View (spheres, rainbow, N blue to C red):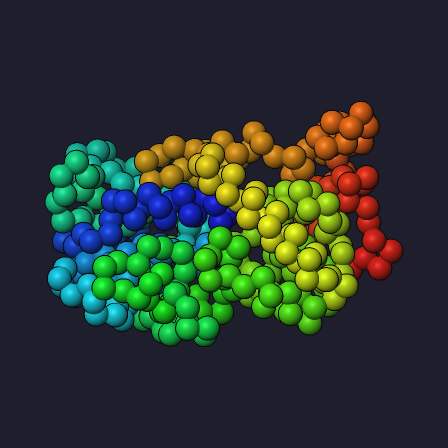
Length: 323
């Protein structure tokens, strides 16, 4: 499943192609991918045709395009948005109208012409766990911008303090300029659970999935079962700094791709999987230990019906471990 850096790669690509353009037509070859739009395909089309995408914003793994009625009212707060969730295999691709339709094409948006820009935004999804829907925007709980995304001209600094109602419960992610380590630390201390379980809790901190949790914990030299109520503020700062470092490097590489289904808006896969230190490396040498002349091997433990990868020397299991 795409994680935060993959979704951010898609957001940045969409922002460069879609922001400021008007949706002139909508086709829904497979209504299953708009099942979250309760009023059906015709209402979905009616909400989108003639609307202008004001920006492309992300909170965790949710993407949305704030919509306005006319292209020239950028200073007016948007009231609705087109929301996209990629799920397991969803792709948002910019294509020319002449390009043949993909086998698993689900939704096609025709955009107003722009020189040297593809004319269609296509949602392709083989496994149909993702989808699109139009929804209302509501105020953010902390008064900050809804998520990552350059605010359009006329918007407050950082963007509008609005978020789709369906994403309002999701915490900010470490790459969000309005993310608060201090606030997260308070929540960690109150939760009294294992550290990795807390990192995967999208209500606490969004966008950190299994891959990047393991990589951040390895970089921070912290065990996944460390009780969160034993963390000091410097500990929380260390793990979040590590998460930012790992995800920023993944962004530079275009994301982590273990699956040919993950591609950016231009159809290219990421390459960060070649730089992983822990995840998926069971039995291989720990790079940090190896640099010190040690022969420690990465271990794999069962965790929440998945796997956790760590170094038994760099990340010793605490006596008071909480899974």
